[in-house]
Amino acid sequence: MKLPISPEKVAQVILLAREASRAAEAELREFIATLDEDEQAALVAVMWIGRGTFDAEDLEEALDTAYAEATTPTADYLTGSPHLPEHLENGLDALGIDVTDLEDDLMGGH
Image 1 (cartoon, rainbow, N blue to C red):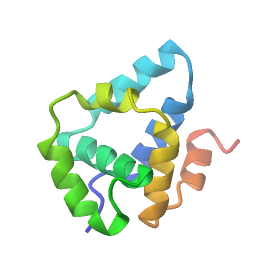
Image 2: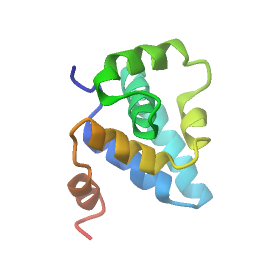
Image 3: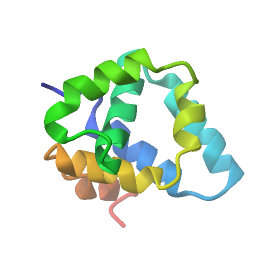
Image 4: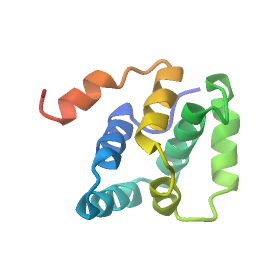
């Protein structure tokens, strides 16, 4: 099953989530709000896979659960999740997607 969000968008969320400032949290919330419903559900599913709630091979079940349990705005749910960047990185890694180069590209090659 193909992930319904681009790894680049997940990498952007990871970078924004690492920033500790209020401005960065506002930017993170705004970025998540611009994602469509499928992308938001995929972001939640990747986070769940990264924290071990689901295995990578259960991506479809994780997505179904994300849709079914989307009672809280996704930005509120994700920004309230401790270790969000690590969970997203671990989730992408479990799905066979290397996010390191994407993060480097987004940071301007630093």
